[in-house]
Length: 162
Image 1 (tube, one colour):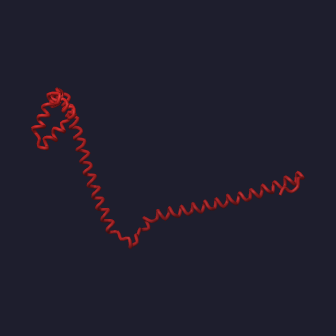
Image 2 (spheres, rainbow, N blue to C red; image 1 turned 180 degrees about the vertical axis):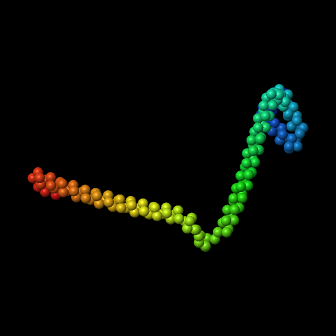
Image 3 (cartoon, helix red, strand yellow; image 1 turned 90 degrees about the vertical axis):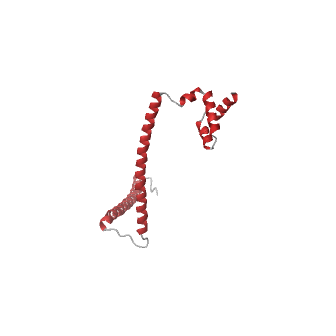
């Protein structure tokens, strides 16, 4: 009896080992082990036949989850078909492309890009003119400050500060 209790503790109460024994061709040992486990653990015997309401709730939840899983699986299958189709179309397009041949684009498709490049070039020219104007203004301000400094020193009679 103690040996069976020790085996039950070592087995961890899992039915997987018993199933594995059955799969390995040891049905007699697996059944004997199952009977020993049921004898040692009265709850194990009850778990084979769960109570009605609890079992029904579990069954409903299982059915709902199974339905969700099926819906997700179907959605995944549709997406996978679209993905494979797109991959095949992409592969066909790459095969039809020839890198040695120039890519021709109509003026209507090219015009928005041309307009964008022209706007960027115009903005760059404007910023260069503003920068040049700012540098010129700074140089003129510096000259004016020097002139005012010289005039102030002459007016005070201190002489030429430079």
